[in-house]
Length: 188
Image (spheres, rainbow, N blue to C red):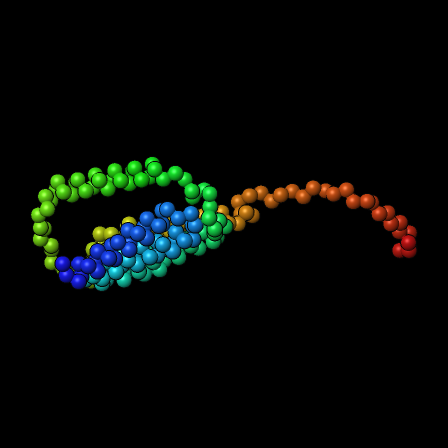
């Protein structure tokens, strides 16, 4: 086992641990910060695998934009900052579904590859990656940008109670009537 393997496993353990903390914490803001740690560890994994472009895209797009958007949405919607009872639900069903999905994927991969080694394709270049992104994957990126924009607009609408609701009608308060007599000459 080489040093790169040890580093890859350590960063993978940090990513899995932070991912578990994301879904188990009762603090919404802490969940967002654990997500930053998880995504940062994944970017570190990409660096160890010599995929520098993918690592920096991970940092710029996911850590730099999506998580910041998530935290701004939390702040704009006035979500609870501290511990929330809404986030404290029994986790047995989620653990059962997650464990079943993990076991199913493990069985599928073991059955498909039978512990054989797989020849990796030649390393890609930034030019080839750019061609793929801007030729084949431009529509999904645009759909994602529209989705993020609509989420931000939705957070703003939810945070402003005066948008989209009719203005409350003011009830006439019964103030005591004051009578002022004015003479035709302008004198009282």
